[in-house]
Image (tube, rainbow, N blue to C red; front, side, top):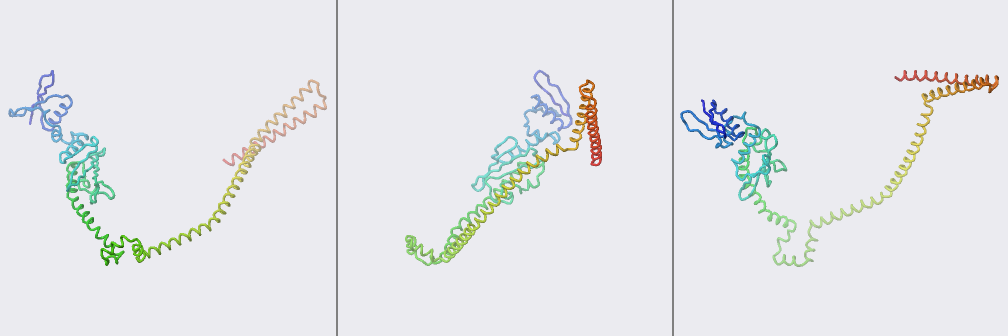
Length: 365
């Protein structure tokens, strides 16, 4: 079916557009109207009158559009609209995320707090009732509604408004029954208290009002009544027994106090000994580190090399003094030979130690 659309905007003249398919036409009209503020006039076949598309409510447009044309925000807004359509007294607490729905049941005011998570409607809403009361739909020790069929079988296509409406109807039906049960329990409480009092003081039921009045006004009679009551006598005996046990435990604790003090002193002495041993250990450890560095094989090798070079330098000095005629031949020969022999011996020891260290490194690696 072909339809003619006339576009009219400001300076431009109206121009016809031909569209086929109602869904495509509605989608394009909605986008153009919201984007450019343009007036659209829809001409239908058979000379039917045109109408201004901007006069159509946007919520009706959402229902006309196929689901694939709606954004997630549009779907979320549509769900919020259903909440307001199917329920009265809806108050927005936080825009697009939290709402309060107030209702009454048998003269009692209640409310539902509807919290929409960020992924709503793909994620089901969280609904809380205030004030809380016993109901199988509520979570244990909580006011959150979890057992409603609309929440248990929730899908993204469910209407939020209908879910909340069903919960409100159920609570309106259940709350009066709960109130009746509470009233019955309240009515029977004095009778139960009287029964308890009769069991504790059975002799009071046989007295006249004058005798009861006399007991109320005479403290001595009250004390006598309490002293002769078997349950109170038994309670006094139990109290005395407990006091005796407490005194025995206190005496036992006092006797063990000396032992605890001795153990405490022993622990303190051992702690002092440990501290002294730790200080001694740290001092010995420092000495050990110093000696280890002093007698390290690599350090000894370096010292031998330096000592060999020193002996060679001393030999060179003796030779220069001999050439300058400062020392005689006999002294030169003795001192020069001694320094040369000392340098050669130190160099030989250095080489032998270096060879041993190299073998040790190869063995460990």
